[in-house]
Length: 528
Image 1 (tube, one colour):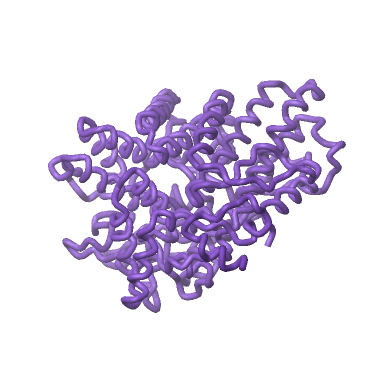
Image 2: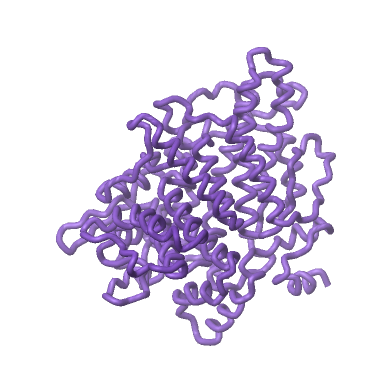
């Protein structure tokens, strides 16, 4: 297993590129081909464009997508093991994470970061060499590299808390990348400054008809979404609200045909998750059947297995629509329940339908599902994120915002409950605490299986909520024997255990790294 030190040094020793890729599909999903010598490179603007493409292409590697899902959701109350779950993933689901777990390997994200650092380092010099490569073009490329790098570090901070913060590239292998950890909150402060710069220079769009670029590359609007998310994680609620409001103002100022909007419930699933790049989409990682399939989602959710359950499934309680039941986040009227989860799972499993299945077809009481033949994109942000991030932040700012918070929640709730005549009522959510629970629940319903739920629960604890609220929610999915159940809940009761360990190989290769506190005893035993 390669350590971060080895990985970063290797990446740029053979920078992969090709100058003949002009189709938007290839640019986003195909690694440029061929090796080249550093001295022969960084002479033209097309070279910069090509490596920016490599930033996006490396971000859709299965190892990245798998970790976006596993880090962001697997430990939550949304997921349990499937019929053929491998040990490392099973250990995560059972709250038995050790420092040799392969999902603690962060090297794929540092690979992306190194591509971004390379663009940021070399692009300014190309302006001086290539007269056709303007400073405006360079600033646009910088904006994309800063944004992709910020996204990667945001994932790392949420998963590990404190990580090495690398902002310069590996060029000739001589750089020292045996770095200590930087505190996560300091990294996020730095990312915010980077994203403010990026927002100034990023494209608003890449042409009215270039949908894959408009949805698949960072724009001013997707940078606003990422900024709002980081502000929310940090508890900087007014700044989160400001970013969301700016997003909505900019959206409203667009021609109607270009505005983002929530789709009708009848079309939401097929347009957002089957077809992709919908009118709700802000940023989604692009895949294609003839270039790069989303094999990570196929393997984790079951699409690669002809309809059988994948490595991850939904808890059996997820479709308990019994009146008064608190087991399922969905009620019988909520179309998201049948859209996102395939009921009647064989051998006691509930299949995940989101991303890998077609929209269900209902005739009377019979609901039919089918596995899609095409691959799926992976959505990072959509319009629902803006509504619900703003709702959460406004609620934390005080009771005077409760009516506005409920109105934002009703945007997604009423869309998904079209048979209801009445919206959610303020009578039932008349204080900050009850509204906080509602927003958290609505986020669970809306973003189930999108890699957000565990991060939501950790953010809840970080803002000062008692940790038993997290354990109470997650423990509902466990059906293990009493002793194992108690041990799992006990582990989750320690805040330090909510984060991943640093991979043991990284600790052994870098004496400046200190293991995350919950796992230090295990690491000491491994060294002795």
